[in-house]
Image (cartoon, rainbow over all chains, first blue to last red; front, side, top):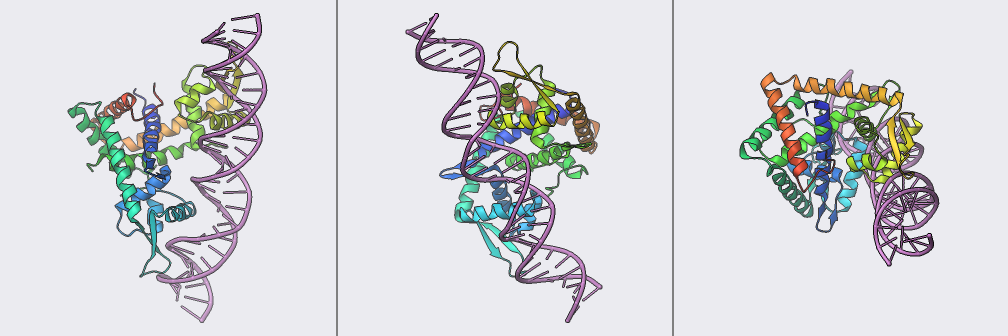
Length: 148
Length: 148
DNA sequence: AAAATTAGTTGCATAATACAAGTATTTTTT
DNA sequence: AAAAAATACTTGTATTATGCAACTAATTTT
């Protein structure tokens, strides 16, 4: 394959599929979007709603409702900020952390499996390249808002 | 970044965002899913509904309705197969081909922009790596049904 | 102190999704 | 060759996701 768009198309589809594996943890059925939200909350330090919504490039109204669901499921907790009463600080509950850890573990297992089809040199090259690509995308003007 | 899951998460999100750029062509407003369907039909030779649905890992009922919409928009044509009356052969209309070409062009422009943030050597390495990754994913048991 | 901005919520309308059950056709079994 | 099973696709229906507009409440700017 030489055509970038072709590579990109297939990769995008496959990433989406791999990602879908994320989402059954014990009793919980979690949607793809929800798993991304949980992932972001887990990674950040006392994030507000706006921050997470922005880093996932989600509409704040959609996001608000997703958070409501996650709070009901007892995976996410909303705490009013002491500094600004408009702001809600998001955090994971104990269950939320458990779910996050589980998803993380299975995703890493899946990725290990994928990478097991390469030799050590290839693995290293690919990882380095993906980092390069990420960097290039973060510099890009045409895409890729969730920057950090 | 060393953690595969982290890289993968960010990349997936960014790919999704880049992909969303696809979808305004002149008067047409096309959804992301629709652009993927058009892409697949364009690439294949006289594909049936099942074939496209499967290669995109879409539920056939959802797919059926998407095709109905695309037919209404005069982008896709359904022709009954002469060999099997159950089967519908999909093809792009003239307008559909126009839209496909336009999307292809803008996506390639976007991708060129992304790759412009690398030097020649990096570009080559990254492309080679993405192909390696695609290959590994196609061999994987844990993911990635749209195989070809 | 009034006006403007920001953070988040709710009302609504639209689209995407998928299970269950349907029709029509083809293939397999007996 | 008739009955049964499988395949290709459609439709009914219910659920969820999405995002614009309009809202409240708090904060910042003027």
